[in-house]
Image (cartoon, rainbow, N blue to C red; front, side, top):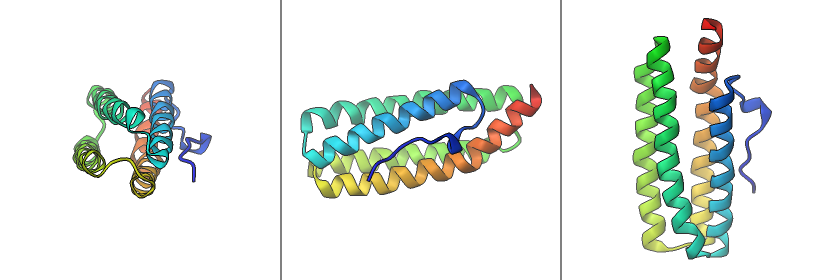
Length: 133
């Protein structure tokens, strides 16, 4: 059970693709640490992901506003929902501890969300940005 970025998830915008790849790498490390019960690795990874997600979403949102992306509001709402859900899940992991169950829960949620979001609205954003030059 590996969470991994694949070329099929490319949005065609180098900066966004690089950020997505980093999100997948760190999420995979977090899942491995949870599965192993490695609390010393889990906390810094949770903190990194929380911060990096904010940076990444803000970068995407700046691009959307600058380009006049017509689906900005819906895309931002999806980002806001991810932040809330991630904070909730991270809090649960902190309360219950690193475990195989926490790893499975996080893997299923983050893998599903990232793949759906990137393959849907992020690729739509990429097409829009590329068409605008």
